[in-house]
Every structure is written in C-alpha cells, then in structure tokens.
Image (cartoon, rainbow, N blue to C red; front, side):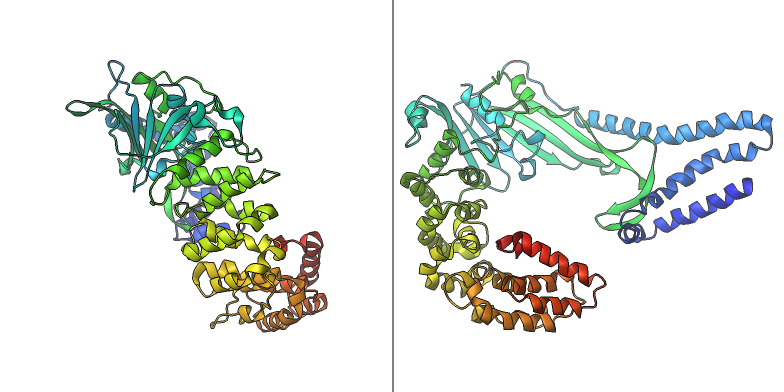
Length: 553
C-alpha cells in the first residue's frame, strides 16, 4: 500500500508541476472543453496527500496508527483553515487601519443643495444605487421629491455635469396629458455653476497590493461654510482578496494566460458602504417616494410606455440652452425614453414632432435604441427619414450611436417603399467611407438601385471576405438576385473552405435568400466537411424558420 501511495504522490506531483508551466493550464481547459478542470487542483491534492502520509506510514503498526491518525488530521485541518484565518486577520487589520481616519458627524449637517463627484467606474456601484433612472438615481429622487433638497448636481470624473431639480404643478405638465399638472416631478435644469451647500465625493484607490486589496472606496461629505468646505463625514470601504477556506492551490490565471501556482482567493469587503445610511448620518430623513422598488432602483419594465415624468424630463433636457453635447446621464435619459417608446401603438403628430426634435438636436450623441424605434414603427420611419439623413450628413460617420448613424442602421429593416425616394441621398453616404459606409451598404439593395456595383468586390486584397458586403447582398431585395448570384457564386467557389465555417456559411445564406439552393447543396457536397449533410440540413432548417427575416442574414 505504501509503495502505491508514494507512486500516486509522485504522479500527482508531476501533474502539479506541469500545471505551473506557462499557459499549459489554459491550453488544458480549451483542449478538454473544461473537462480537465480537476487537474488544476493537483497541487492541492498533493498537499493533502502529504498531510495524510504519516497515517499511511503507520498503517502496519496499529499502535502507531492511534498516534498518527490525529497527527494527519491535525495537519490537514491546519492546512484547511490556518491560511484563511491568517489572510482574514491581516485583511481586517488593514481595513481597520485604512478606516482609522473615518469621521462621523456630531450633529446634523444637511444642506439644501448637493453635489456628487462620481468616478465613471462607480456608475453601477453600490448595488446600482447611483445608476441614473427616471430621471435621476434613487438617493436623488428621495432628496428632491421628499423636499429635502432644491437641486442635486452629479459631476462625473473626466467631465460632464448634470443638474436635477424638483418641480410641481404646471412645470410638470406634459403636452397632451392633462393628468400630469398636479404631479411632482424631477427635471433637468441648466447648470449655472452655483456652489453646492454639501459636496459628496466618491473616490476609489488601490491600496495594500501585497494583501491583494481590490480597492478602497472612500465617501467624503463636505459642508460649505463661510470660510470654505469643512469635512463632516468620511467613510472607507475596503475590499481584499482573501484565501478561501480549504486552502485550494490552483494555477495563477491572468486573463487567458496561466503560470505558477497560488491560493484560490475570493473578494471580501469590510465596512460596506450604505449610501442612504450615510446621508441619514448627516441629517437627511430620506423619505420613501413613489416609483422606487425596495432595492432603491426606479427602473421600469421596458415593455411599458414612457411615463409622463420620463417625457417631461426629456423635454426639460431639450429646453436647456447651449450647444455642448449631452453627457452619458443625459443621453441615457433620452435613450431610455426611446426604449419605452417602442411600446407606443399610435404616433400622433405631436409625438412625432417630439421625436423629430430629438433627432435634429446635435447635442444628442448616444441613443442606441433609436434604430429599434424606427424599424418597429413604419409611420415614424416615413415621417423622420429626411431628418435622419440630415443628421447622418452632419455627423453620421462619428460612429457613436447618434440619431443619424442609428437611423441609417435601421434602414435594413425599414420598408423599401419608404427608402426608395431617398436613394440619391442614401447612396451619397457610401462615399463618406468609414462606419457610416458600412451600415449604409446594408440597405443599398433595398432602395430601388442595382446593388452589385456597390458590393463588388466582396473580398479584400489579402483574401478575407468583407462580411458586411455579403450581409448587404443577403438583405437585398429578391429582384436583384440575377446580378448578385454571380458575385456570390464566385466568392463561394474561390474561398478557402478551411477558413472559419461562419465565413462560407454567410455566403451560402445569401445564395439561399436569392433562391440558389441547388448551388448551395453542391458547394457543401464538395466541401469535405465531415458533417456536410448535417450542415446543409441545418442551413435549410434555419432558412425555413426565418428566411424571410433579416435575422437570417
């Protein structure tokens, strides 16, 4: 038994040593499709086998077994718990040291105006508590709708400020909706740079890297006095990577690279930040307000139509003077309105004019939901197509999801009858090059002109397939099949079938969409693929399910 145990230990040690070779553990996971995961714990198994070695050595002598059994169990228990205990002890001590300078207010220190300095990385921090909703985050809504603040300014690191203020009565009215006149609401307001009475700053910093600290988050609150800002609260939350119980040894991974060995660790936070509790600590009551779920988030299901408050907030944003591009929070309010507006069944003139105003406003720079709104509402697409092209002419090539770019992207799903009158303007966008050319090509076969001259050649000089041109051919109307099929056939017969399967399948899908099924069957038959029959049937099945939809392409 002893000999077999020693041989097993040597084999396990060899495997553990191999797992420390650079990138070998990563290769093992990919080659075995994850089935080799148990081998990553070879170092852990080796240590526990070493802990049990005294017991194995004592097995021939029963008296020694009684002595060595507790010894082996003690060694295994020590290895299982001591590294975790020591790691936690060091982390707690470091967390206490970093939080030693924290300050708690001795008396209420509230102010009617607040400014929050927020790092970009903290947008989704604190359980989403700072995530902009309709139209501001949970703490902002409670302060403003609860009457504890006149305005709240959000300042993002790297630039961009947003000022929110509460309003009531006629200021909250939405055109065409008389039921909103008596409601309280939160609106965007022009920021005139007035100093805030209470400045709240959330900062992040790396600390104690030797202990594996992920970061330290520090919340400070400063009240504006006659002689300047006075710090009234400081709260430090720290997060460390501590050794897990069981003391598992695994290869050290960094992205897709692996090397060496280390303890398996998990994140542990100390002195966690409860943002609402901190605001209460300086004297705010933070009353409950409507529209907030228990978790503090004001998100609404996307299927619901825009609320009156959402609409009024966007109107207030558009009413702000100036020509500076909207920041992320402001663009997000507009995009959220568009996401909900997909649920509108009817689009009266005033609603279309509202959307037209958004489309034309050059300050609106990031509305990725705009393409879905256009493609799902033929009436809206027909009414706004000229405005979309105007915006695309102005800055559609920025590729930053502005209304022009997103509107052109939507044209691949818009009725060709809407696009055809604008064919010259659409074709002119192709000459712009860049990202706007690519998304314009998707609709070039749907505007009443032969797309073949614009889609040829479909391969780059070094042989790679230009996928967006193949997709554009697939999306083209069936009447252009006679001019596109020769291009696609030439591409299908000249492409290296050893290239990624998705390349050649995109070409075959385009041929299927234009009725060249027999040619597709011949190409797959001579492909040499081991699953040629299944590949052909899979394409046909997909064609039968969604061949008439742009999703097939």
